[in-house]
Amino acid sequence: MAASILTLSAIAPVVEASPGGFGGRPANPSPDNPRSRDIFIYQLKGGDTKNDQVLVANNTGSAQTIDIYPTDVEITNTGAYSCKQRSEEARDVGSWVRLEKSEVLLQPGESQKVNFYITVPQTADVGEHNGCLAFEAQDDEGEVDGNVRIRTRSAVRMSVVIPGDLKRDISITSFSARVNGDGSQNYMTSLRNEGNVSADTNTIIKVHSLFGNEVYQNQGTYPVIAGKSYEVQFTNSEQLFWGGWYRVSAEVEYGSKAGSFGIDGSDKVTKRVQDIYIFATPSTIALLVYLLVLVIIIGAAVYAWYKRHDKREALRNWKTYHVKEGDTLQDIAEAHDVRWKKLARINGLHAPYTLKAPSTLKVPHKQPKR
Image 1 (cartoon, rainbow, N blue to C red):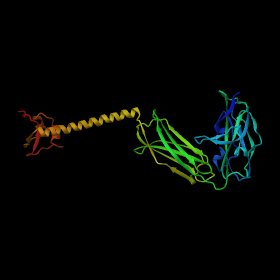
Image 2 (image 1 turned 90 degrees about the vertical axis):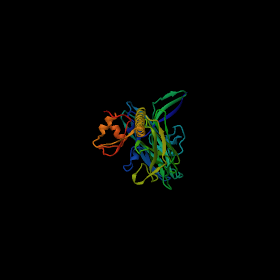
Image 3 (image 1 turned 90 degrees about the horizontal axis):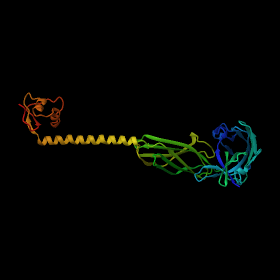
Image 4 (image 1 turned 180 degrees about the vertical axis):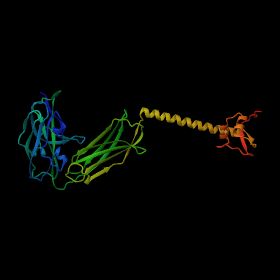
C-alpha cells in the first residue's frame, strides 16, 4: 500500500491566483492592510478568541468536495515557508483553530464562506506564531511514485502576533555571485531575521560595469520568519555582452515596525553589504569587436612607428638644401623626386608651406633634374 504525501501547491489566494484550481483566501481582508488579502493577520493576546471566515472557491470544471483543515508550519533549509502534513500533530497555530465545517461541496465556479474561531492559549509566547489553512480535494487520488502517493493541496498562511517586546532585525549574512559556463549568472543572498516577528523583505540586486552603467537589476519580496534565515537567488540568463569586470551590489528593505506586514515607505529600513566583483567572458560579437579594435590599434601603432622611423632616417641620411628666392616646396620636391607632402612632414612644415630664403631643408641625396 502506498503511503500518502501531500505537496503544497501554493500558500496564496488561489481564488484569484490559480484559475482552474481550488483553494481559499481571507474572506474579510482589512482595507488598511493589502497583505490581509493574501494571509490571515491577527494581533491577539493570550486567552483571546477571534471569529473570522475563509472564502473557499472551486475554479475547476467539475464539482469538488474540498477538505479544510489547519496545520502548523515548518521552514525549509532555504528558509521557505511550508505547511506541515495533515497527519502531523499540531502544537502551535494549527491547534488554535476550530472550523465550523471541515469540508464543503462546491460546483464549478462556486465559492462559499466558512466560519472559524482562533483561540490563543494563555501560555502562548510573545511574538509571531504561524500556521496554515489547507485545502484538499477528496477525490484527488494523486500520483504514485514508488511506494509514495503524492497528492496536491493549496493553503493560506495564518499569522498571529502576540503583543509584548516585539522586535524585527533583518541582516544580509552572506552575498555571492557566480558566472556559469553558458554566460548566465547566479546571485545568492542569505537573509537572517534575529527578531521575534516575521518581516516582508525586498531584496535588490544590481550589476554595474566599471564605467558605472547598470547592466542588470532584479528584486523580489520574500517573508523571513522570526529566528530563521532565507536564501534568495536571482538568475540572469542573459550573457553580460561586453564581458570583463562588473561590480555587484545587494540590499534588503523591510518595515521597521514590528508586527506589521508589507513594506511601508514611511518606516522602511535599507541595509546593504559590501559590493563584490565578477569577471564575465565577452559574447562572441563583443570578442569580434574587441579583435577589430585591437587590429586597428596595432595598425595605427605600426603606422605611427613607421612614420617616426622614416622621419628619423630621412633627417639622418638626407642632405641639406639651401632655399633660394623663388623656390617653392613643390618645385624642390619634384626636383628631388620626392612627394611634396613627405618633404613637408620631414621638415616639419605646415600650411601654407611658404618657404623663406635664406633657410635650409633636408632633401634626398639625388641630383636635381635639369
